[in-house]
Structure formats: structure tokens, C-alpha cells
Image 1: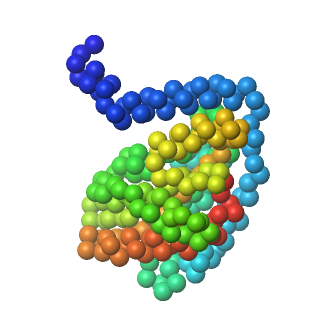
Image 2: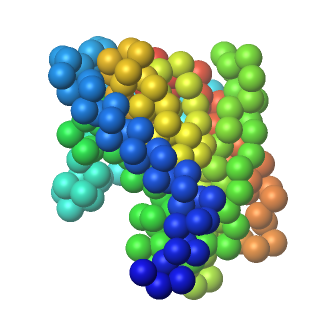
Length: 222
């Protein structure tokens, strides 16, 4: 075994990921012995056309090839216009009844670069939203393709919980599978066009859409 591989195994992120995968494997083995609880879910197609003053302008098609890769149980892909008519926000939601059979949300950090987008900024922000006593953690991902730039905000939503970290989502999956016998979850993503000079304002507008849409979407998510 070469020294490079040994060094990789000693890295903290590698050790954390290994521990999460081991816990997930053990938990899945345990819960597979029981019939999973799949809570009733209202279809995303019934989500409001008006979310806090943002008006739906388009119901976007999700190509079959994308659906086949995602394997989500329900999908939403819409474009909304801001109340003042100055900004468009693309709202994408992938909902999963269960993750027992290997189905799971795909991280935009993996999907978007595969579509030709180059990441420029990847960080996490806190957003205060109606109905939540604490701000929710949200990933901010700024991407660029040629002269086009976009701000991406996304998070994972499961039973009474919002998380940004993919690691945290996996850990909670294990715990919820053991404690609650359920593994339903959703990935919520908002994309808004921007420019290098417009980044701060685009981020602010994207945050406002999250704040406006969160209460209206809440009944359709885990």
C-alpha cells in the first residue's frame, strides 16, 4: 500500500465519510428488517402558483433522461417572477418517499459541473424564514458558464429538519431510519441569473425568494 493512499486514509474528511457510510450500511441492514413508514405526501404539482408575491411564469419540463438519473418520486421545476418584475427564480424540488433502495438526492455540486458550469464560490449562509424559530442553513453555490453566471441556493429537507451539509443529511438519514423508521427527504434548489457586478444583489434577491416561498412549499415537503 503506497504512502499516498495511506495519507488519504488519514485525512479527516475521508474518516468522516467512512464512518458515515459504515453507520448508513448498519442502519439500512437493521431497518430493512422492518416495513418502512412512508408518510402521505401531497403532490408537488399542487404547490401554489403564487409564493409570497412571486408569480409562476412557466412550468418547466424535466427531461426523461434527467428523471431516469434522479429517480425521484415527485418533481417540481418552475420559473417564478419577482413582485417588482425584475428577477426570475427557477425553483426545482426533488422529493423521495424512501432512500432504502439506493435512491437519494443528487448534490448540485456534482450535477452542475457535469453540465458545463464552473464553480466560483461555494459557501453556506443562514436564512431566516417564516415558521422556523431558527434560521435555516442553505448552501450558496455561484457558478459560471462562458459569460453567464448564476447564484444557486439549495438545501435538504427531511422530517422537521433543514440541513445544508451532505454529510449531515446522511447522518440524519441513519438516525431517522432507526428512530422513526422513515427515510423520506427532498432537495430544494433555487437558481437565479446574475453577473460578476450583480452578485450581491442577486444573492439578496434569491434569499428573498426563499423567504417568500418557504411557507407555501412547507406543506408539500417532508
